Amino acid sequence: MPDAAAQARYPLTQGVNPWLVTVSVMLPTFMEVLDTAIASVALPYIAGSLSASNSEATWVLTSYLVANAVILPASNWFARRFGRKRFLLICVTIFTVASFFCGAAPSLGVILFARIMQGAGGGALQPLSQSILLESFPIQKRSMSMAAYGLGIVLAPVIGPTLGGWLTDTFSWRYAFYINIPVGILAFVLISRFVHDPAYIKNAKVGPFDNIGFGLLMVWTGSLQIVLDKGQEDDWFGAVWVRWTVAALIVSFALWIWHSWARPDGLMDLHVLKDRNFRTGCFLIAMLGMCIYITIAILPLYYQEVLGYTAFTAGLVVGPRGIGSFIGSPIIGVLGSRMDPRKLMTAGFLGFGVCSMIFATINLDIGPYTLLLPIMLTGFALSFVFVPMATLMMATIPNKEMGNATGLSNMLRNIGGSIGISMATTALIRRAALHQNDIGAHLSASNPILQQKSAAISAYLGHHIGPAVARPGSFGLIYGLMMQQSALLAYVDIFRWTAVLAFFCAAATWLFKKPARHAAPPPGAH
Image: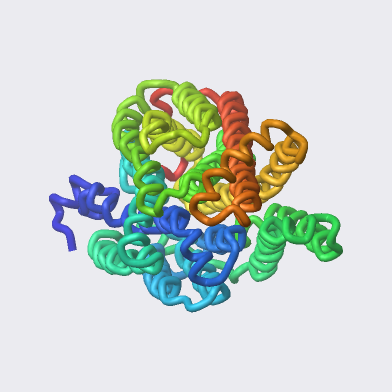
């Protein structure tokens, strides 16, 4: 038990230095977000190893995010029912064990099941960690605590591709999941030692579990993900099952909203959305999730699938974003309490949008260092978005509603990220096919430029593979170049759309109410 002097110095954390609490809860948060990104660079290898297509391999990301999102709203009830510390330890254990089975999976079905379990175990890690951090510091120092939290959230998707690429090339893609095991064990030890439940958690009276609300949530999130992942294969609404699944999605979603509003003591209390700043933040954090996860999934794929980079090289190329995050997080921790957070968020979204426009200027001649600066600036810009957004969203939320609010906001971020990945994957396939048709229309057999290039390639190939197969081989090479150029243009389209989304978010930032300087703590806050 902490002594009286420690209790007096750190009353909010029962005598434990709040920075020790920060390290303890940041480890599982960092591990959970890292795992979302670390697999992105290994997707082509997972697909090849498990006999799946690249689009099917993206289910490794989206199944995790959806399972994560389903558990997020229930995390507040479980935390009150079993105690926040005990529930956090259970989640760390489930996540760590599921990571082993992800790495040992012999087929796509097994790894998807393990990822669902891993997402279920990791779903509560972020809201629990965030609520613990917010309650461990006085309200005047919450910007610094959220800067530390934001550093982990922003930095993990950046380190993930580099670390995942190195593990994939050096050992196997399976070690991208095995790496969670030692981190999970360390997190379990630190949480056991330094994290304690506040009195209102220990004395909380918890009602029965909201089976109806949880069931409706599973139906509409599951329906959404099935449509997003499989709709492209069956031509969307051209398939009868897609129409029925969308109908189930709409009905279950409407019933979930009605049930959650009518029963505030259930799985999730949506009355917290009456708060304008929180409502605005929920919308923006879903858009932010789309922006972040699109770039997480798309950039490594571009370098590997179009330019032919190895997993480690692709991860290393996108890694400099971490430098920007390292620079931005301490700066935002200082500026957060001195400037209007809306201005900081606007600058962050604008910076992200400009970087996405620069990404849209890519061509087949770029080198590993061509996008070094914009990739670095992307990490810097994201740090200016996350921390002010989290601070504004939670500024007027009482502590007793913190778990409910963080669960809802993190759920929406994951849903947004899952939608973003699925939309980007679909757009890659459809836009590449469209550009292939456009380019192919100019490559008729009578085209003199095509004939000239084909003759030159045939002459070259004739010396190596013989004149009989030289001409068909020349057309094969030209077709391969056309496919590569079509894929490039599809990636350009996605980066442009991401930039437009970021610019829209920059304007929507001003829907937040201006925060009061030196405002009194919200009800129930320390």
